[in-house]
Amino acid sequence: MELRTLRYLVAIADAGTITAAANAIHISQPALSRQMQELETELGTKLFNRKSRAISLTANGTYLVNRARQILTLTDATVADIVDDHAVSGTLAIGLGESRLNQIVLKAAQQLIDAFPDVTLQLYSGNADDIKERLDHGLLDFGVVIDPADTYKYAYRRIPGENRWGLLIPISDPLAAQTAISPETIRGQALI
Image (cartoon, rainbow, N blue to C red):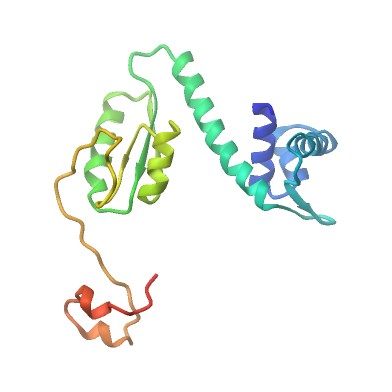
């Protein structure tokens, strides 16, 4: 499996059709189709559900596209780090959980970018498990997760402050009339 083939696969997933992907990456449609057939043969699995003019990813295809994005991101960052000879440059990849405390991290990142314009920022939003997996695979430089989180194998610092949680409900809901809602008030409620 070559990086070029993974780029082709991602292009198809992004474009939605082989023809549109072929146009976007400047390769003939038959050549791109042949590359994908060879990849399916190499892996021994179907990656696409093909219909007359539509194409969709199989479960294995979706899995491979997600992994391909990670591989290509890491590869591109590695090449950029090696090729670029500036003192401070490259991509800073940060994983963030949903928290207002991210403002502290983002402000520090902005100061870094202001001081070193050759640094680019790549943000990833996810839960603690997603962020830790990306850290483990070298896809993030650091991550911000919300407690409680297992930190036994990571160097970490606590960000000062406290998260505040909210509840979005229709105005017609009886809870909308309350000035504050405690965990006991919503215990047993179906929440997303």
